[in-house]
Figure 1 (cartoon, rainbow, N blue to C red):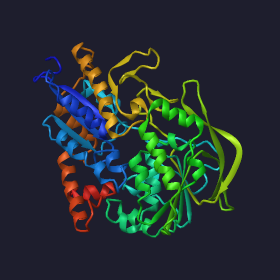
Figure 2: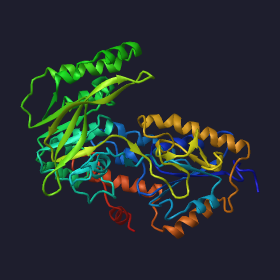
Figure 3: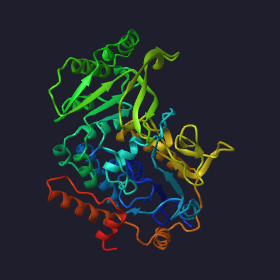
Figure 4: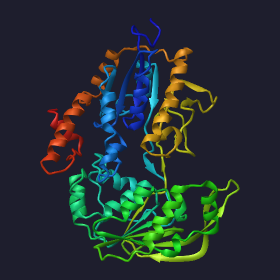
Length: 466
């Protein structure tokens, strides 16, 4: 048998997860001049792009344009997509070990962290990611229901996802109708009776995770006034010192923007978005029917840790907020994969620089790797995954050079395809996806929208004549 990485025997790599990290890793692997690599990209869903399709807010179309670069990667002759093929169910770890020299896990961070407070499981309390998946047309979530008949909602957290949720709740039907939001979500949000949305941050304005363009966008909503409590955006001494010491111009500008909003009079718009800082929920309050009716908040103060970071701690001051709908967005964690070593504490695959580690020996598992959020945890933006993927691919190529590879029994493209066809005859190839994409864009064009998504797997397969 020829050495893997040659024209006679290409290095066969399976990547699990067709989000941005999977594409960045694919691109790095296929660009190698000293090695011939074949990549098979697997995803549980029939559609590629991961969170770019199903996580990026529908009113942020510019961010989604990165998919054009992904399609160029996918056009490479040594690339294949197996959509609608679930790892651990349709193909197992043993299957992949028998067909590939290397396996790369890029499955992201799929679940929300819990707040760990009483009342968190009351009806009307949800993880923010469920709402995001619902309005973006994720097939697993299209039948979910959210009570938009209440007048007040709260979003716990001030990161990108929290801001997206608050903004979508405050958009007018006319604004949403110009996006690729799922049709059923557009209909439900058009009927929404929500008048007031609270966005709650546990630390101060200088520590808020949202970016300056995002906070400016919240101040420019067509039909929602942004309200900021003046006292909550006045910097304490520790925050002033922190900004001065770090010379973080973006943080200083963020505070200036928020302080300007605090002085701005309301314009009398239909909705009100209230941005709060230095508050944390300590309990969700329920009504007699077991539904969320309110939230108990504690006021926080900042203190400097030994490392110099500013953290929040509770005071003895409390308040109650009347809300009927709550979304938590306080962090995310990965989900373990069958047979793959996992660090439960951190919610990531056990790894070192992307090499999966055996939990007993702490030595690398030959031929298995991780990249993206499932490797390092949920941090950064889409582009942050590019250097992360590059680091892992570098380890993969080092192992190739040193002969540290699996020796699969069936290391051919034909054998892998035969396995998938046997296990999942209705799998979606990349040409299939490009056809679905054309159909979605055509449906959108007829309505003056970027696209109208297929939201159910059966719809997608029917459109492909399956």
